Length: 400
Image (cartoon, rainbow, N blue to C red; front, side, top):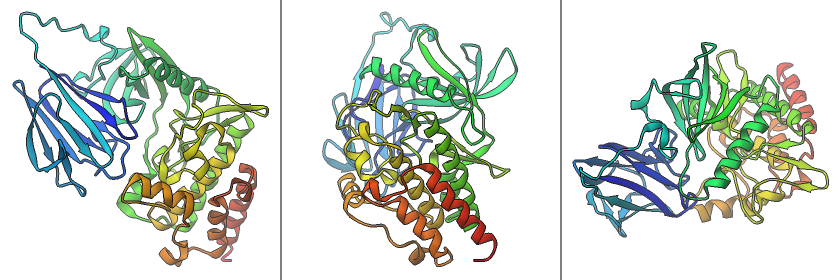
């Protein structure tokens, strides 16, 4: 039996996930989920599909908003080809094809470019890199810990998740990420080592960071100390200032894309949405009227048209990330994507001091200025923001 899930409605429309062998496959918005969906109404690990002996069952994992099968809420139910699973605003079709044993000719692993590397395949060598373990799954690719065989160097190894939906564009954007990352050299930006394609598998090899993403720290410990939040914001803003000097904007600054090492060094990662721009206009693969990024940290203009956003979108995102670090929660949330978008476009976040009275007014002002709805009312360039962040850090150290 060959089974797959295909998203038909929602932010991930067109995305597919293959269930190629018996096992349990989790669905949710967390990186730990086997099939990650960009849906704030989904729980981190929302549901699980179990495939065994030619049959499949879906089970809701006590999610906050429940799971629907063909429009009806379920706790556990058998799946049949053509069934529609709905999680939040995401609908996905379950497809199943039975294959006769005599006719089944399993493809060689190296000849199946659409098949993601799995934990069971640790030890597989791709392009001279030996897979050790899976670290996480993103919208564009899966990241593994691997060893560069020729040098014995541990790397973060990102493999493109190819689906049947707009494959050419996905490959172009993946390779653009590699080229963009390779052009950057900054202590607060992850280092890109290599990229390539080995028998249909596209990959990027990057610096392996011994650290933890900020969103994990926030989830486990809550709001940061003001001094640490400022220190991280300064490092990331310095990285954005450097990128701007190279004609590059990130477009997806958020806690999950910032790693913090034990030495308190912040590293900006994931350049899948980064794009180059020139003064006469913007260039890239984003379509007119297409929004890209993560809603909780995106400015209004990026939601409606990511093509024409500029460095001030990154400045907004730094402000939103700093807000999260200071309060322990994103500036906006919503019971639906529509409600969340409406909040970003029309409402103001809860004042920081109402959530954390220990944050000085002058730090709150910086965040508020970063997050103004109109781009022309924000800091215009990363250097301007960096100056005020350093001044705030100095004032905080002096007890002001």
